[in-house]
Image (cartoon, rainbow, N blue to C red; front, side, top):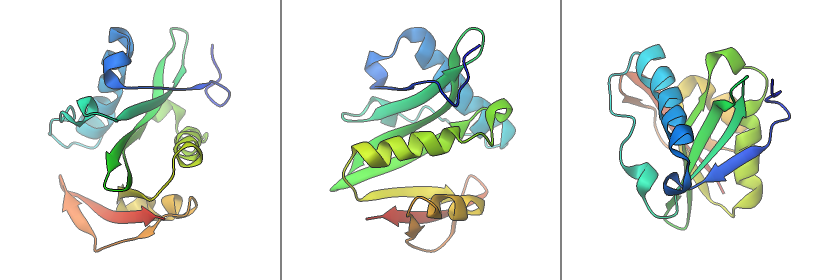
Length: 148
């Protein structure tokens, strides 16, 4: 079994993903954002297919599958980070932080994201600051954040 804390970070455009990996990334996001958080919405919003969008993920398990992921989208003169997700069985071991650090180290900012409000302190550890008023998205409080 792969230890996800030591597993390599993988990245690719959606169009470059093997079908099995794309399916498992979509399934992970749906399991967390739609089922666990009880937000009936279409996670596959078409943005994954936009030019310049990159998926980053970490695999684990006996049959390696994504257990943590995020996507990075070009936005203005910088980047939007979104769909940050971790399988519940792999939370609290630093996987999302590893992915975020990878993005911040390999791209020039600025960076923006819409954090679920309870996570603003966590994103703050990576240099993000609040950049607007809290808002509801799918019934969940979110806070816009920015990192220059």
